[in-house]
Image 1 (cartoon, rainbow, N blue to C red):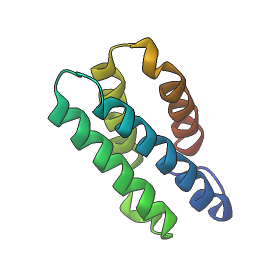
Image 2: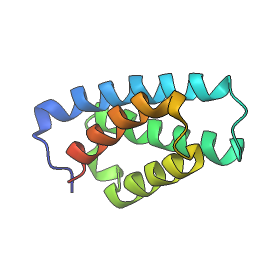
Image 3: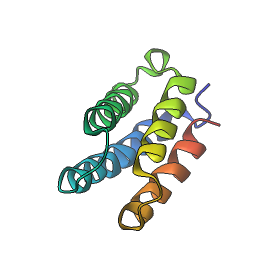
Length: 98
């Protein structure tokens, strides 16, 4: 279940979408293993955030969103270059999907 109040969910989704787009751009310039899987998961996460922006939280499945993000984290393998963005996204996802 999405834990934040409806009024702030769209704002949080917008912030996350910006961060996800930034991460996608940064990883696009790097040689990252399993590129298709990474890009696919980032695209699905972005779709989830767009649904929240449109006020459609029932179409977002928190367990899938968290699972997708966990997959992205594992694919990036703790690369220091992405650490600040990964940390920022992780804290927002944790806050949004408690």
